[in-house]
Image 1: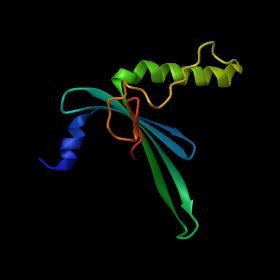
Image 2: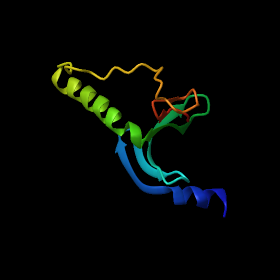
Image 3: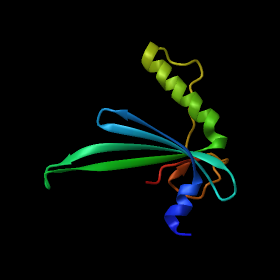
Image 4: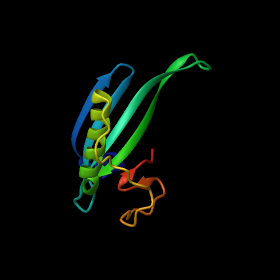
Length: 116
């Protein structure tokens, strides 16, 4: 079995949303251990003045299920603030030095993987 067919088996669900020059992808994948996680990706179409052509820049974030509640609360608070201008009573303010951060990669913070 080649690498690409193995990667395809990991993807359980996928949805894309077009928004102007950006496209957002929400993919649900599964680790070999059976844990599900979300990969949120943003793809932007960018014009390169040097070559005179377009290319796509892609950024990914990995969100693990143990962090869904915190992530959802933070996103909801931010959206509500934008819509109402009212700061939430208890905004989520996590620092990046938590002892519960069990990922060894310096680009993984509270279960969110900022590797590209």
